Amino acid sequence: MPIDYAYQDYLDVSDEEEDQTSGFKITRDQIREVIDGMVIDGLETNLNSRAEEDENFRESLLKAKALEGGKLQSIEGAIEFFSGKDLADLQNQMNPLRNGMIYKKIIRKGSGSIVPPKALTTYHYASFCFIDGANEEDPFDSTYLRGTPFRKRIDSGRMIPGVEVALRSMKNDEQSYFLIHPDYAYGALGMPPRILPDCWIFCMIHLLRWYDCASATEYEQMTEEERAAAPWSTLRKAVESLVTAAKAAESRGDAGHAVRLLNKAKGWLLNRGMKSEEEELEISEVSAKVFRLLFIRLFKLGSEKNYKTALKTINETLHLKGLSDLALTQCYFYKGAILRIFKDFKKARYFLTEASKLRNRDEKILNELEELEKDENKEKELERAFAAKAVRGSIGIPASHPQKSVAEKDLINYLTSNGVKLEGLDWESVLEKVESFRNDGARHELILPDFMCLDMEMMKFVKNLSDYFRLSFEEVEGFQLFKIVKRKN
Image (cartoon, rainbow, N blue to C red; front, side):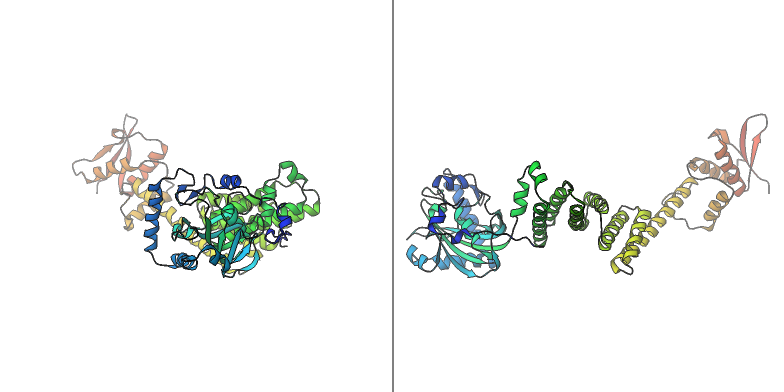
């Protein structure tokens, strides 16, 4: 269910109502409090800004003007509109807002509703000082030149009042020019040298998008006691507001911000106390949607940390009541996919199989099962290769040496078929001595304690190795020693 916000647009209030409109009867001190400490294109807005800093800005502006593209075309269009005009001429070509304190001209119409209170706005702008007869044709600030739009919340107290009024008159994707009175801008003092004293501000604004976050803002500002006392509908609207914001963030490529918003919504839902069975089912229904949006986006982001957080969220989802088949399928599928990545193939196959039972012949699930089978086969090959490498190394064949001779395979098969356990024992020194002995024509016997001590497993190995190489394994008479002897042909 969409959220319906009822409000009175303060752009339409009468003179009498204006004095009672919260936040818009503004003194010069309030204006300076708002702009104090703000940064305009890297420079602090204070009276001590130095001329050399201003010159640095102008140099960067000149470099930017050497570029080509739509950003500067927009700025040039704004300059062309106000250039050569005095204040009265400019006002006559624009429509008044706020009793002549702000003027507006729409360059490109937007769509949808105008920006409501507490909405989060994303916009590009370029601002110029406009003094009758001495207009500045370089913007003192511009997001176009920085290449990054502004993101500000209406009623946050962090905007120039005139810009906030301007935004409140706009629709999505609208582009307009505004002429703002000094009392709604930087006042009689301005911010020299960049912003001249008592100057009107000519501002071009392109509102890229806005979304309504009033419900989320209000809920976030509540105390724990107020949240506990609030009806479920209050939280539901706040969560829907965050979900809308998350989708907007994702649409502009900011998946990380989308995840943070969804995670906040998840936290609110998990902390909500259940007041009735009906409310519990409603909360579970909304939670299932939010949690699924969250773990799917975490999965798409990748990284071990995100996968682990996604698994946790999936498990939290599976504890909710009344999950639909679609919700269960998504939980099983993404849990299986993550477990496959973590090489827990047995559990991965279980959850992917459960998902396929709910959505038989689903292409995405079948593809994931195919990937799982490939990974399982690769893992088995690696295990076999590792085992073969360990065995070859244990019988004196270098680890890098490929197993290619039938004799090598025969030796391994012979030893294992006679119950010799090759794992966990060091055979390398034995093989080295035995092979050296076999190749030494002057020697006829090898006393084993010369280089080793035998335990039962090692003795079993040496006896079978001797048999395989047609050597005799004998006890030295009168001593508790053993030897390998070359057999007579």
